[in-house]
Amino acid sequence: MKTIRAVIVDDVELARERVRQYLAGEDDVEVVGEAGTGAEAVRLIARLMPDLAFLDVQLPDFDGFAVAARLPVAPVIVYLTAHDDQALKAFEAGALDYLIKPFDRERFGRALNRARMQIGLKGGAPVPAAEYVKRLAIKDKDRTDVVATSEVDYIDVAGHYLCVHVGPQVHLIRGSLGDLEEKLDPAEFARIHRSAIVRLDRVKSLVARRNGDSDLWLADGAKLLMSRNYGEAVRKRLGGA
Image (cartoon, rainbow, N blue to C red; front, side, top):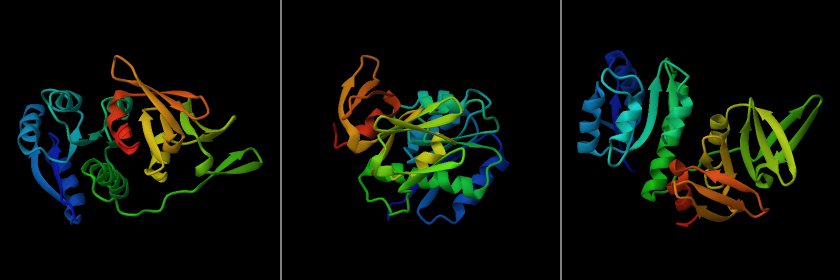
């Protein structure tokens, strides 16, 4: 079993202690270092090259986004913060997840499981089997449509709704794209943008843009934007395209 080497970065000792407590019972995770400032974090991560970093957004010298930007090779990052107004910036920076303090053990556990999966995919290690949804129940007033996930082409965000695209049909559901992503089989679906998830077997081609983003074309002719922050992981899951 692969041991995940993790670091904890937060300027508040009690906050670091909470993360340590949540990790204490995880046999496959080893906390290899801690830091309380951005400068310490950059030095620590560059020296230890951990697999995973729990990284506070608000630090005394510079923020967690600046920490990630200064690293030649960044680990999988789960951002921690007391505020919910920087979630978009976190995902634009390539964060795996974003935990709002005070988070409970269950929410932390979901983030850790996502990290396990991402680290397993990066290292080519087998990912433990898990139960993922095979159907989506989509309510519209008094009617409920049941859509098999095998029929879904992609899902994107429109205001307060998620748009589930099934051929020419679009079903609207309420919820968080991140929460839905956790329920979908990562062997079948991938996040390609902060506001879009695609079914991998629908992808026909990728066309790179000069800024590092890509146009992702589906078999039905739909064109989606794939952010450069997700591009490398998606290409690996498509077989190194």
